[in-house]
Every structure is written in C-alpha cells, then in structure tokens.
Amino acid sequence: MNIKELAQKIASGEIDAVEHTHQVLEEAKRINKEFNYINTFCEKRALAAAESVKKGKIKGSLSGVPVSIKDSIVVKDVESTAGSAILKGYIPLFNATCVQKAEDEGAIVIGKSSQDEFGFGSFSTNVGVGFKKPLNPIDPTRACGGSSGGAAGLAMKAKFPTLSYGESTGGSIVVPASFCGVYGMCPTYGRVSRYGLIDYGNSLDKVGPLSKYIEDIALGLEVMSGHDPNDSTSVKAPDSDFSSYLKKDVKGMKIGVISEAFGDGTTQDVQDAIWDGVKKLEDLGATYEKVKTPLAIDKGLAVYYILATSEASTNLAKYCGMRYGVQKETNESFNDYFKNIRSPNFGDEAKRRIILGTFARMAGVRDAYYLKAAKVRTLIIEEYKKLFKNYDVLVCPSAPYTAPTFTEIEKLTPLHTYMADLMTVGPNLAGIPHLNVPIGEKGGLPVGMMVLGDHFKEGELIRTGAAFR
Image (cartoon, rainbow, N blue to C red; front, side, top):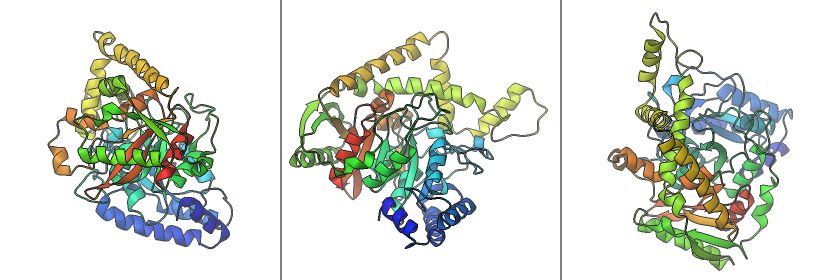
C-alpha cells in the first residue's frame, strides 16, 4: 500500500488515524532500537495531529500519512540538531516551509531522522558526538549511505506506508536511497523552499522525498514544491502535476548513458546492473547513446569540496554557544568560550570541513581556489545543458558500489570517502534534478540507477522511474 492509498483509507474511515499512528510509533520505536533511524520522536505531536485528521479538522492528500523529517529540517517545538551535539537543546519556534506544507495536507510527523553531522558524509558514519550511526536495513553490518541515512533506512525498513523527507548537498538523497533500495528524488535547486533548512551549503542544498514507491515520490514532490516568499532562491516553477507522469511510458525517450561513470572505480556488479536497466528501457521503446560529461566527472569532486566547504565554514561560524544549542556559564574571554564550545561539540569531519573551507576563502588563495571553482561550476552547468538539447534524461550509477561494511569504511582515507560522491556532485553543482531508481540487487544488496534531467524536468525522471515499478 502506498501513501496515497493509505490517505484515502484514512479519509474514508476505513483506517482509524489515531489507532494507526499508535501502531506506526510502536513499530518505528522497535525498528529504532536496532537500526538508529530516528534521533527524536514526536509522539505527542503525532497523536495530536492524528486526532485532528480523525475529526476532519485537517483534510488533504497526506491525511494520516506518517512522515519522518531529516534532522537538518526544523520542526516547531521539536529538538532539531542536524545531527550535531552543538545544536543539542535547540527547539525551533517555527516549521520549515516543506514541513508546514506536509502538515497542512494532513501528514503526521513521527520524528527527526538521523544523518551525518550537518550533512558532512557519504555513509552516515560521521554522526555528531553522542549520536548513533544508522544501520543498513538489509544488512546491519553495512552503511545506509549519507547523509540522509536515517531517512532512507526507515523508508525501506518500515512495514507501514511512509514518506521520508531528506536533503541533498552533494548526493545525500540518491546515495542512501541507492544503498537502501528505495527511490530518492533530489529536485531542481529552487523547486522546494529551503526556509527552515539548517544550512550546509546555501547554493547547493535541496529538500526531497524518499520512499519505496515512485507514486509516493510524485505525490510527495507535489506537496513540497512551490514558491516561498521566505526563500529568495525558491522559484515559481511550472509543471507540478508529477503524478501525471506515472501514466506515461518511456517509448520514444532519448537516453544518454554517461560513459565515464563505468570506469575502474565502479564495480563490475554495479556496471552490469545499470546496463541491465538501460536494456530494459530500450525494450520498452526508449533509445540510448553513450555520452560524455568529462568536466562533471573529472573536476566535479574538486569543485564541490572547495565550494561546499567554503559555504559550510561560513554557515557554521554562528554556532558559538551564544544563540543556538549548547551554552554554558563562563567567565572566559570570547575566544576561549568560542573554542571551548566548538571543540568538544563538533565532530572530526565537521572540523575538517571548517578548516578546508576557511582556507579556500582566505584572501591570499581565494582566486586560486574558490573563484576558479565557481567558474568551473558554470562550465559544468553548460556541459549538462548542451546534452539536454539532445537527450530527455541521462543515466549512470547512483554510487560506484553497493553499500560497504563499516569495517571497509574505517579503512578509507577522507579522500577515498569523498570519492563515494563521484557520480552525484555534478548534478548537485548544476542544480539539476536527479532520481535514484532501485533497479535490482547484486550479491543480495540493492543497486541504484541515477536518472538526471534538465532543470525543472522532474516529470521526465518520474516517467523513467515508473518503468521499474
């Protein structure tokens, strides 16, 4: 049963919203004891919302649907930490716009999902001080993928119909979706409001849905999309009837297969699975050709980690123990207080990215690093735009391998860890929509195919993803 079917049954009275929410919370807590997908449960809030739905006070397309919200997306009166100890105790006074839209449609927010601290990671292993790592729903010795690991893990593991709200800066929706075997949509930059999103990189952050079903992705995106006067980067974009694309087949579509994504760094199992997916699309009437995105693949990681860390180091400067989160009584100087708040409450990866970003923005090297990276970013956008003149969508693996074990991850250097995002940094830098499509398994583990579209062409991605239902 998908979320639309659940909402219809709750609206008709066939399923009692309050009783169902009790069952959902019980199951989610049971799952959480073993898999660590939720940082904070919203039990009282959820039951109150369910009561409003039951009484008919709230009616909408998500009536009674349980929704998890990534911890970096604020929920009013619920601790929202972005997975970091430095924001412990931060209770927002408002809802993020995407959360408000969901609740206006009757959604039941059940909790805040676990993640890499501030989104800094590819595996959800860089959790904040005192937080637990989410475990892969298929094999708990393996990673969920990052940074929306809890969102993807719960979407897969839950037996109840649910929608997860994730966030992506450089691949944090499609990579965990790939490792956990669910659909994950990262929309066009500006399609969904960022108001209420705890920043990682302002020019890169996007909110998007994850679910087992492509129908849920379409409905979820319809609800969260739209212009928001509170977010100057949100866009009045056309075409928000994404569910209509579920009825369209892929016959006549032109697909570009990114050839650089099939190099030595991509395992043979993943390559084989992606080509099987391409052949299936061909059997359904699509045509394909191999294409090249040399800048996105060869330069994307360097550009991304210069720009993203530069923005992150600026954004994280405000966490100094004076306005948000952790505070303490002190007689110290400001510099000492600043240091003694930040040093124990930021994790190692957060500190690494602050240092990298601060260096890249320094007056003596800004031209050589930050400004040059910004110029190459523009060239990457142009590279994609040129391809979309001839192709409806592009495809490649969402990740170069299936979910690794925690033991394997521990052996990786930071550079090798960053390379997990090799496929995904390009579309995130360009702000183009991309969708993870679970296309099968290899060795008992899910493999995801990433489908990329031109700006505001999410419908074409849903059309492609629907072919694998």
